[in-house]
Image 1 (cartoon, rainbow, N blue to C red):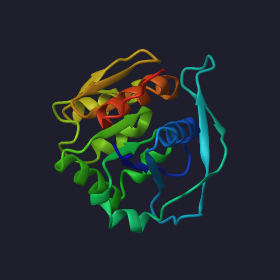
Image 2: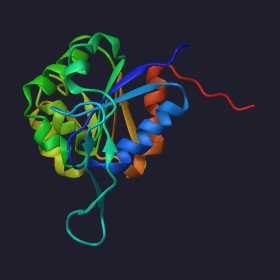
Image 3: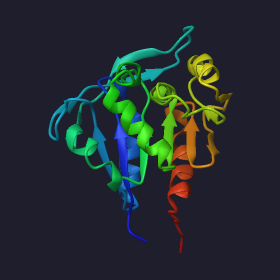
Image 4: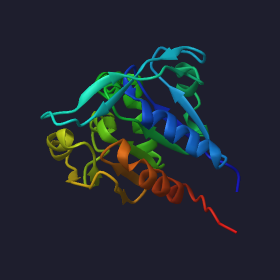
Amino acid sequence: MPGKKILMLTGDFTEEYEIFVYQQAMEAVGHTVHVVCPDKKAGDILRTSLHDFEGDQTYTEKLGHNVTINKTFSEAENQLDQYHAVYCAGGRGPEYIRTDKRVQAMVRHFHEEKKPIFTICHGVQILIAVDGVVRGKKVGALGACEPEVTLAGGTYIDLSPTEAYVDGTMVSAKGWTALAAFIRECLKVLGTEIHHT
């Protein structure tokens, strides 16, 4: 089976692990991941953040490593038919790229074409910006996103920090500590089998 193409939607200060770990894991098994950000071109730099829970009432944020965008946003926008799935990484990026009508149109394409949609942490904010995407779905995300999921007609699933949830072809998780389970479920939805000998 040939590898699949996955479109990763990001913005400045998207969660570092949810970019690097996901992209490298998918590419390790032969898939292609195009990391895009509105108004950025291939070769442009994206700044990332690192979030953690360190005893405060909410998460802390630190500056992460820079990521090099590997696909020009406008090119991806015009080639959506070539992608098999879309991935909404979390962190702070989703809170501002979700208002971009072009990003909303991308998500709508995957929803209407019934292609797999993958979301982790705050990534669900991108999905709820498009009417109907989470309606009737069970979705995991960072706990702070529960009201938005509910208001958008979804059912929030309070996953453990290391679990992922699958509803049809939508895979979701609470945050980066669930990346192993999340990636495993994404691979299953993509039809990827790994055999140990």
